[in-house]
Image (cartoon, rainbow, N blue to C red; front, side, top):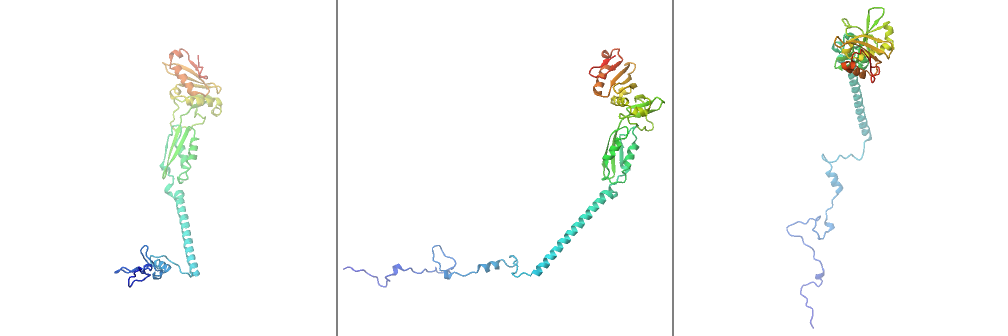
Length: 324
């Protein structure tokens, strides 16, 4: 009978029992580290207080500032009070500084001599022999000594435009002390001659009496004969005649020898065009469509075949002129 042979010195149950692992010679095992698949003994792991370690790392110069758990409320109140005082002082300082700056700026702009209007630095252009420069400067001088910021150029130019003979006026500030004034002055539309004497009064297209400057000449200015100057200034026919005369070119105005206006629709002028061109009577009617009327008259008078021996041109209806 064949029997089982058992090797001497062998442990019958040795095949099923796990032998303890041995550390590799020459190295110290790290209880906190192990290779994948190795057995780890929890009893050999080093204990570590993570909270204490974190607090230790975050303390010191580069760490986080940690307040003590016990708060001194009295110290905190004093700290808040000091901070509040600093903020209040800062706000008051800013407010005072702002008021001082505004006051200084206001004084500089409105009261200081830095921006005062100097009459010597005011220039006036556009005046003629019928519009006196002194009348313009008198209006400007009323603002002398005031700050340019306060000078009302709109009111100034409005008053200048009201001067007889001034059709428009502009005034621009020249900082820091001057003004540049420019007026557009018209020559008289006509001279009104009263029936009681030889004196004549220059008026503009709006029937305003012009202030004659010394040495003014009335040559080339049409003359309208009226009963009296005062009545003529309020007469509708005379006012219409002034508008007609003001719109005529200088070449035709210089040739006018007589003006009549029995009604506002019958303004008539007599022309002396010279020896070669003759004398004509132009019936304008009223002051409407003057651009068209002037074009028709120019065309008729410039064409001998059209005017022929006629001496009167009626353009009161410019689309149907009548020659007589």
